[in-house]
Length: 141
Image (tube, rainbow, N blue to C red; front, side):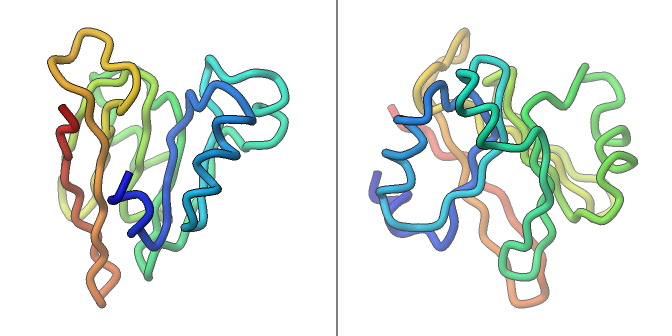
């Protein structure tokens, strides 16, 4: 929780579940930018978009819950979000970071539902003055 409270911005790639949980995350302090996921209740799906583009300290980060099949994902996301420097996504709850030619895709896994993963995880994004974003995976247990 200390990482979240200390953040300049919290990005959530969906599967928040309920509006009450989103309210709890927002109460931590930093602004929260989120997209809805496939398990989110109807009220939350109405409140959050399916995808969005965020200016995070000069880095353009696209967000979507489901980035589709793993085969060709990086190129597909580059085509879908041509104005973005990176795409943050969720859905599988499987951590992933790929980069090619300065474009990145990042799935931080999940701090709450690790599914078949050995650990609960979340991501940390650091943006340099040039708008360059660097992602790190944080193991939580």
